[in-house]
Every structure is written in C-alpha cells, then in structure tokens.
Amino acid sequence: MLGRKELANLDLQKQALLLESGLNRVALQAEVQSLRSSTAWVSNVTSASRRLAPLLVVLAPLAASCWRGVPAVQTPGSAG
Image 1 (spheres, rainbow, N blue to C red):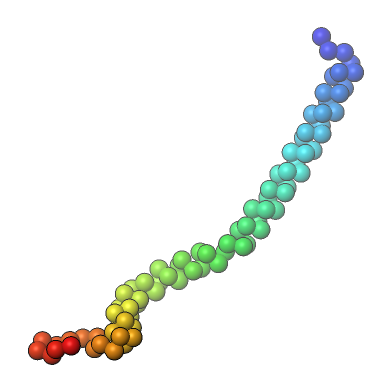
Image 2: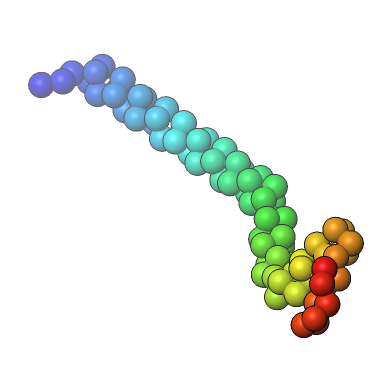
C-alpha cells in the first residue's frame, strides 16, 4: 500500500501532466489555426481552376496553334 507521501507525489505528478496536456492542447489549436490560414489560398485556387477548366479546354488548342503559327482550324483541301 502507498503512503501519504507517495500518494501526494502521484497527485502532484497528475496535476502537472494535466496542466501540460492543457498547454499542449492550446498550442496544437494555435498551430491548426495557423495552418488553416496559411493554406486557405489552396481552396481558392482549386475552385478557380474548376471554374476555368471548360474555358481552358477550348483555349488551349487555339493558344498552341497561335504559338506554332499553324491555323487553328484547317478546312478540307487546305494543306498545312
């Protein structure tokens, strides 16, 4: 059986661990909040790319043809 001194020591250790756990919880919450604010732009970029994807599908071949100097649309009978 534990004596009073040992029980008091265990109680102090328990209180210290509870305080440390509380501090760790607060620090973790602060880090999560910082991470959320640091990565908020990612959702903005992905949503913008989803909105622009159909337009890019149309514009990409046109841009490539302008870059290479080749007509975007070739009609039958016209040699490129």
